[in-house]
Length: 438
Image (cartoon, rainbow, N blue to C red; front, side):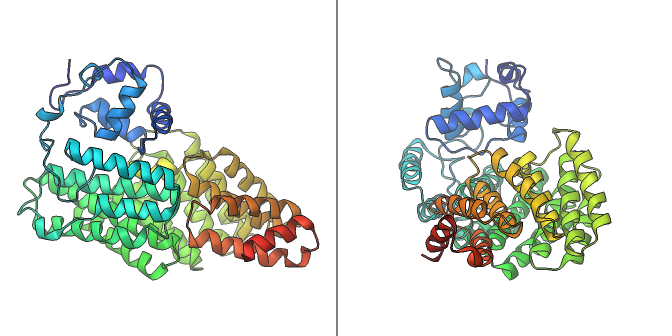
């Protein structure tokens, strides 16, 4: 029987069995890849389904769930009929997002998805993003409702999904329009306070996501502006989770810009905001951000203390309070962030060991991160005196960059190439330098 409004979906919970929410989310993502779907499922999404907050999944998740449980209907999985869920009458939402679309627009999106999957390029990804996410401020409602809040939230997920697979360079310009639309919706006001709270959170998260696209594509001033916008939104809404997210990214940006003390302070501010949220993984990430700042200041003792806190918090495991945006943060990311600390402290061989673990552990679904971790490995190996291994890793990154566009990764690879020039008599190094130069 379908779940009633706001009632827990106990049927779906039983189907999860002994798997943790995070484990089940991984199974969902794996099933999606089997049928060529693209979903950004994590533990938080599973929790929203089981709590009854998501009464009917969008079309992409519907296809994945029915693939996972053949012979079942949505009602068999505990969901309500689509036509009975408010905001799912087939009317196109103002942001034209897949979460609220008619069957015909779903078919249209399927064509785009197949082109996206077949094209395998960030250019196609950008085109898909522009067609599915661009909003029209001339068609905004007088007051935003639940469907508009959900559309903003789905825009965040779509941007993160495309970034994970293709990097930021081709996406940044396309993502600015949904951000403007989200803040226009926020300015218009909402039909109820709970919806306005969701809009504040969604618009702020969208600002962080667009800021990250600017950050990863080397537009540091734009990134700083977007992160500041997200922080201001968090402060207005008294949203501690959004505030912690904004500070985390601000710390990351400060470290990349060489402002190490600012990175430490931003990470510590994020920690203060996150203390009451009950997410050890978030505290772990913020401790790693702080460690990166201390490493940039060459304060080994403070860096090691922050790393120890990060490992302690990470060992506490996942929590229902973990933010949805932290789906990228697992053992691989922890290894990568620690590698950067040791590299900044000049211990390149030690950094290479952690970078290698990061690359080996990373789920191939996150293609951008696989390229990033491997680029880190190449740089550390080059500086540690292992030129042939560095060239091999660099070549692997070049292979990945046929699908991933990231100015940051290309800059890292250029630095590695410069380090390897004295070793160009090695055939493997020479091959890498030729490919890199081309």
